[in-house]
Image: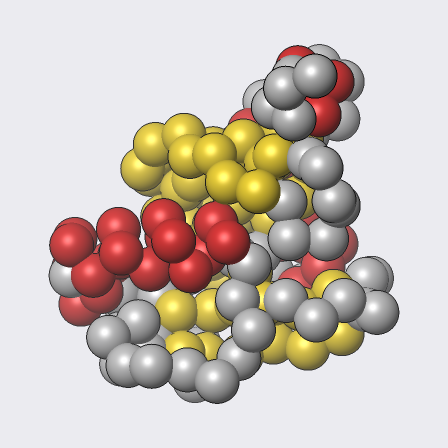
Length: 148
């Protein structure tokens, strides 16, 4: 059986959030080793932007102001063996002070152009970071100054 069947796909909405310094926000869920984009699974009947707004509020305590669609990307799921995530990826502009909540244990701001020792989810490592580098993280920076 092919490991990438429809039943093995997890549909998520994920955010690229960039601060003024060009660093991107990653999160790590409780009891998991991998850092990844903020976001989460879509609920039945929910659009990707709706899911992203809900997840950012629940997990980071911030409000989604705008979401620019960057594309749909697939990669092996970091925390669910034999599954593939299919991510609707957005450049997200947010408001509020970011703080871990719900199942988020830790946040990290990383420089996409630098090597990191953090364990990264395949989607982040193989697709999101190269995309951010190709677009130029400074082109994606947020201007309201609330992020560090």
